Length: 64
Image (cartoon, rainbow, N blue to C red):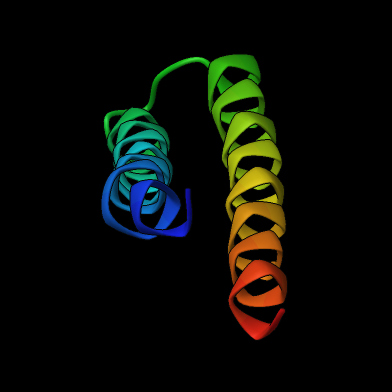
């Protein structure tokens, strides 16, 4: 289970955070809708929280 989390789920989560971050930055640089940028940044924060929880759970399971 730990190997699945650390080798599959974490890279997918980190990639999702990076993609949402880049989409939000591109939208802001192009002068897009401010509400869209705000929603993308909120989604980024939520994804970051989820990834941190997965990392902490993985570390906890490895320590057992």
